[in-house]
Every structure is written in C-alpha cells, then in structure tokens.
Image 1: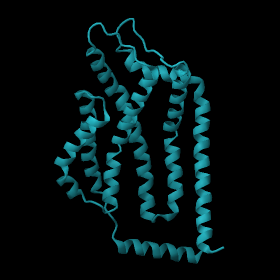
Image 2: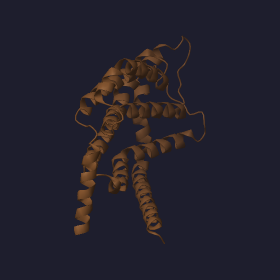
Image 3: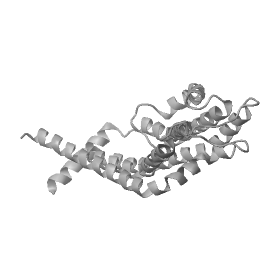
Length: 257
C-alpha cells in the first residue's frame, strides 16, 4: 500500500472516530435530558403562553404531537449543548494540517463562535420572541381565538433560534475573511452601505413578517459586522514567506526527533 493510500486511510479512520465520539456525546446528553422533555417544552413555550389571551392555550392537532414535539426539542437541545465539544472535535481533526500560528487562532475562534451562537439564541428567546408574540397576538382580529399548534410553534421557534445563532457569527466570518486574505478591513468599511441594506433584507427573509423582529435581527447583525471590522485589524494574513519559514522550522524539528 502506498504512502498516500495509507495517509488517506488514516484520515478516514480518524474521521470515523470523530463522528462516533460526536454522536455518542449527543446521545448521552439526549438520554440525560429526555426525562425533562416536557419541562423543556414548557420553557420554550413560555414567551407565547405569557402573551396568549386569558382562557386560551396551545393545542395539538396531531395525535402523536404531544410526544414527538418535546422529543424533537430534546434532541435539538442536546445538539446545541454539545456544540463546544463538536467544534473541539472538528478542531482536532483539522489541527494536524494547520500552521502553528493558525492553530493559535483556531482555538479562540471556536470558543468565541460557541459563545456568539448561544448569545444569539438567548437574544432571540428573551428579547425577540416576547416582542414578536406580543405583536402577533395584538393584531388578531376580533372574534378570533388564538390556539397555536405545538408542532408548528416548535418549528417556528427553532428557525428563529438558528437564524439568530448563525447571524451572531458575523464577527467570526469577518475575522476569517481578513485572516485568510480574502478581504481587508478597508474593503469591509467601504462595503458598509451595501451591508446595511443586506442585513435588513436578510432580517426580512429570516424573521416573521413584522418590522419589530426584522429590525431586532438586522441591527445586531450590523453592529456585529462593525465589531468584526474592529477585530479584523488584529488578524491579517501572514506573509507567504513567513509561512514557509515556519513550515521549514517545523520540518527541521520533526527531523531532529
């Protein structure tokens, strides 16, 4: 067997091990949380329940929905809780192919991306959802009883969570673009007017059709873009000669060993 084939086989084995560890951690978290599935759903439904008119409640239009909706939520929560571990496994898999200065940058990026993702979900839950549901319930025509299906509500809220979680990753994307040499901080500042228009369009597409939730997504995205520009000044692409020198130094150390 050639050296290239052996290297490819080693990578595939490591990839399989990484996937198995990730699935195992998510599975353990799921089994640990399944007992609290109904409590988790009640927590998720609190922003809507607090805005529903007196005497109304959520409904289940499908016979199996009272079981599958909390079950699905618990699985999603398990994946979200496991994100730091999943990102760490991803970093371990790609680390051998990175330069030393790249390894020093990847770890802070993975930590900050996890925190920003959680921050986006928290912002959506504590700020966006109460305002959006207050708007929706207040706009219901007279004589209409609000009775939201639990499965539809779960799908709606999860879309909002992931939309805000991903949107809050903008500083990471900006830093990576500057670090890789794709763009510069000056180019990012020059594109500011187009970005402002773009984030409001994304806010319109990713959130419910009301001005409040659209603005609550667009404004943080714009501010996070500005924050990413500030950070990008400290992360610029290392000159190619420096990378070659570092690679040569690492090769020399490995040879000595």
